[in-house]
Picture (cartoon, rainbow over the protein chains, first blue to last red):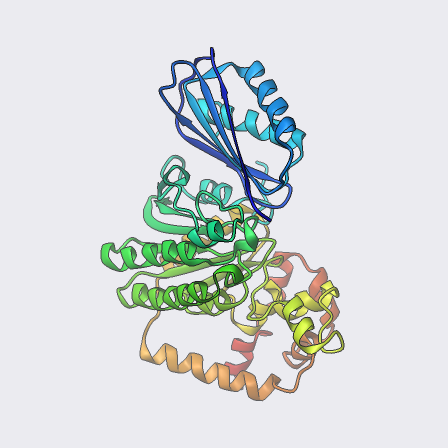
Length: 105
Length: 300
């Protein structure tokens, strides 16, 4: 049942302005995503805390795709996960960044 | 206008929908990371807000304080931090006198991983509800989520000034699965959904007089009911308490032998008790006139 903590950093993103946002719920097969502004010289840092151990390479791929879609820089993303599938993670990340930028409320 | 389901909404969506636009200010938001130390010790995932969203905002222009439990995180179970956040809202209300405290409850009760801390937290919530009411602040409970309102929080709910439920909402002490586990399937079949709703569902609670207002499952309907409850204020007189005790005594005498919600409904004068489940909210409220425990007790 132990948690696995994973860290990712993507450099070279563009400054993304917004306000702290949280989306999703830490429930079975779901996850919550917190996006905060952070002075990171254009980088995007992502911390993942997941109850499903051993899927680091899949998380890596999902996060790489996310960064390729948005090039969101100067943000910190924190994820609490309870076994969401990669597709759900991608959708939540998109929802989170849109919410951060204030497009969705 | 499209109505939004209260049942299917998250705690945050309920707050956003119930309160006046842009009026909500959250206390201890997710970014504060006020998470459960106990879950961390057990190496279990911990939500940023420990499963409850608290803060202040306006409803129809009146300032209220609010706490909304997120059923999706551990069934809305009350841990130490979670409980302390609700207590903090209520104690602050007793000090600052908002127009009301709104508790959007969705919980299975105490979080077993935090057993004693959770139990203490629930008893503190009960005391804080009574303190807020004693300070003149109505405490209004809304129940209409997937997980219902059970365990110690079921008792806490009944300490409030008013309870608003939807038909889908459930209110009780021991949840259906708990009763079945403790007393056997012959006593209570938790998979018999009709039986569960006849025992703990919104319509039954309304007929018994435990739920004050029953609404259709939409955030808009809950909002209108909340506004009405704020306007009604809080009857906290000795006379009303004695009346409530008399009602409870009377209820036990009249229905103590009943095995099923249907038996109670027949005693309340419903000739076709099975029709209750099929009625929509307006039909039900109209038909319930003169056929609830309160009204028939007063008529006796």
